[in-house]
Amino acid sequence: MINFVTKYALMTIVLFSGYKGNSPFFSEIKLDKNIDYIIINSELKNAFKEDFKPLFRSGREIPVWFEVEVYENKQIVYLNKFRHIVSFDPLSKFYTISLEESNLKYRTSSLSDLKQMISALELQIEHDFDFSKNYEVVIRSYLKKVYLSSLKKEFDLNVLWRYQTPQIKKGFKFDAQEF
Amino acid sequence: MLKNFSFRTTIVALFILIYSGSILLFNGYFNKQQNSIQDVYDSIKIDDSFSNLTFKSAQDSLKAREILNSYSQAKSATNLIVGQTKIYSTIFIFIAMTISLIIFILIFLNLTKPLKELTEATARIKEGDYSIHLPENGLDEMKRVKQSFNEMSQELENVQHRLLESEKQMIWKEMSRVLAHEIKNPLTPIQLAIQRLEDKYYSDKEKFYQIFPESAQMVYGEIENLRNLVHSFSKFAKVSQPSLEQINLSKSISEILRPYLDSYQINLEVSDDCLVMFDKTHFYQIMTNLLQNSIDAIEGAENGEITISSTISHHYVILEISDNGIGIDDEEIARIFEPYFSKKKRGTGLGLALVKRLIESNNSHIRVTSKLNKGTNFELYIPQKERSK
Image (spheres, rainbow over the protein chains, first blue to last red):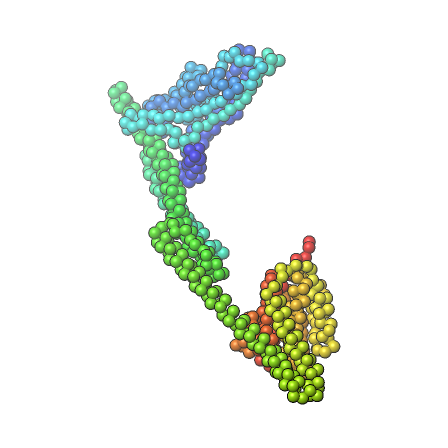
């Protein structure tokens, strides 16, 4: 019943709300494997086109959350939550992007570069995964509430993604011959 | 287009159309106004001009930074609030619409369902089923209507029973009258004949022997009439269950007509491939009765003629037996199929009543039209035998 109501509400939003918003989705997961690491690559697309510019320039740190999970037979064997954080200096007009999964920071004055950087995901996982088993990697992203100090109010950023939580899955298996 | 839909469907469809249309129009207007507000905010641009200013102190630049941040936060908050409002208002509107639609439909059904029940019940009463009883539930007004209806149907049922009773009594009376009359008719000449014989036997033996054969013949004749009378009543009383079989109308009628063709002008215009499912014996009795009626009607008439023809209409074979005889009075035609009703000098009045009964037992029906001194037309409506595929 709850599922039906949720789907009904989402369908209503999509069809009738008149709010443009963003419809984010992940590009296909690319997996590189070696004997010690798995490198997971993907990109969040169509996520920051509308209404993010003033938000990124608000002077407040704006985090975009990511979750990466690896499952073995529906049991979770790896979980990582991290953020891509954007902040802006209105006087220098430079954006600073922090990528927590790799502990890297970048600076750019270009909004399009900023969007590209926070959308890209590259995660290196040190593993002891089994060669004989099937695994599945799941990536999802979401926005949380932020507090805007000048307005003294909290705002739910999910509205910019029309309350969607983009997610992607991919199965993989190790082949002993690869190594 | 509205003619093809029921009243209920039309009302519900109109309601949905007008209600959703209004909601969508309102929502569209609301979104448009919000977009206008957003456009106004978007048109306010201060960050570029601000950041190009030269500040005398770190404090000034900090203040400038704060102003720019406030401006950006206000702008993004506007976007967020507008977006949220648009989304939530749409959801609320549609939830409200769905709930009100459900409530409307429930109330509407509560009103129209009892009306539909009443319509169906009235149709059944029209067909003669007075035992119908509606459940006395629902809204108060509907309950009262249904109570009144149930009282009415109960009263109708009582009236029907009383009518049936009085009809039965009338039939018994009529039957007794006819029986008495029909039995008395032969008894009187029998009595007179025997009295005459008795009288002559004792007074004039020669005369007795003279009149005896004639009197005996007459008595036998009247006894035969009494036997025929009993046979007619018996036949009417026990109409057997029909045993349906395929009958070729043209062939069967030709066989029945054979003894009459030499004496009467009878035209047969029935197609050779006309097939029906009917009880053969019943069909023979029906045709013989109707034929005899037509023959009686044209008796003594110049150019008296009987025509038997067939047509097909709406899955029925219509068999017509027409004559150009004396015809039947308008007042009498309504009673022609009643048992014991007859305008003939002799007869039980059961012939056409038996015909009607036999026809109806074979899932068919009969109609009659007539004009005085012009002729009479009997139409038999027999379901057509479905052709096998």
